[in-house]
Figure 1 (cartoon, one colour):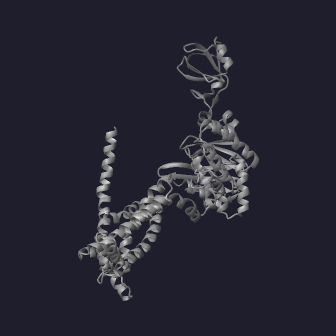
Figure 2 (cartoon, rainbow over the protein chains, first blue to last red):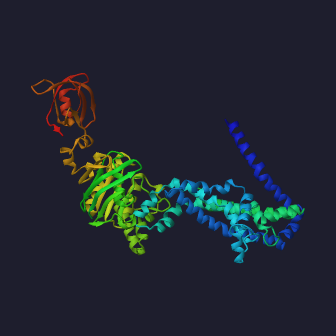
Figure 3 (cartoon, rainbow over the protein chains, first blue to last red):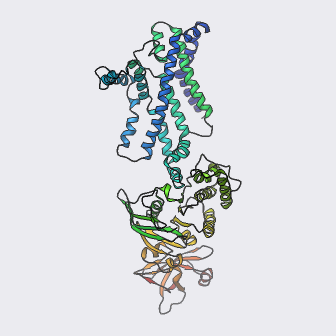
Length: 265
Length: 316
């Protein structure tokens, strides 16, 4: 019995080590290959700083929007019975099924010179492609499902009796949402936000297609990693990758610390 | 505050939950909705509360049409079978909820919550969370929460259904006393006839989405309106077209002119009474209820031959 348990643990941990921690450790080691000085030089490069700023801005717009949308969407799927609820439920998952590159291409077709919306925006002097708007739209699309996916099962599990009780006690729909529903699903929302943030920070494919990857203009952190790597700037690539990984780890750790131990999402 | 239900129907898919139900509940009364599961009693209660919408019909509260009012506007207190406690709030916050959403002054909320904690005997539990309470305590908290905004009507949906027998009996008596003090119009749903008879002034018997009878407990038992009520409220033997209660059968050891022969199949000593199952010579099964003394005098035993005679019969 003990041997089996040991084997199970060993396999699970080994897998984790091999697939997750190994590469991460490699990034860490390689980033410091040419010393802390070289690393600092790479990271303080104005174009690198800009890339991180851009990634942060995109995440800063996307995460709040997708959080609100995800919660509203989950409420619609679980609490309202309307024709097409199943379709909405399936549609929310679409971004998980579609390759980000395809998403990027479809945006290209929509907002390009000969696309459906492209000419209209061009006439009104708004640049969508090769600019922030298309990068935000692409990121919104790929990180759409995470909040809804976390919140839907929690909403199902808590049921609607507490909400009904609140209504009988004289609470409006709005009061019921803020005082009863939201506190009950808060950890699901937090977890969804963490996943959404991580996805935003890491998004590559869709953004790569629509951004044009202009250094210092439309280059996000992940694009910068690829760029540096292709230009044989290994220290640069590993340096940026290290910071990206660190950002994700910080978000995850912050969530673990904030979340009370006895509660399970 | 009086409640009037007029010709209410409700359908869930192909299931007819309520079929043209009308009901008058007097202001200040304590009424039980009694029926088997699926009889529509909970649906009726939820429609009165505005938690469910009728397909047809009208609800009046205090003489005014309330059919179109939302739950929020109806001013009813509702207690759920599974408590519906706000898990992320302390007992105190749970009870204060209805007052907080009405933006009552802090001081008023404090003193009202204190009064209610005392009323439901939960002083000292105010800072606990629902997860730290027993079922009975949770339900008392839910009751205090429902009473806090001083509802015009108190509605309880199988309030004691999830509790064990002893706590259930305790809370029953407690609900009765509470009603005698406050005289809030109260309607509770139950499938337990003893609970309905024990607590309510008036019992509404429901079956298959219809009201079968509305009567005080005693009348319900002594003068059931139809066969359903006869068989659902209390036990009854059906012999051909006549119905006989188990305690309305006289059992003797020697035959006389009006008795029939029967054989004892089973004797159950419940402590406070003795129940016996007899098979009459024509094959009819009879349940008989005897006092301890009667049973002792007869020395009933399995296989014994006795003679029975109904002392009181009902024919519909």
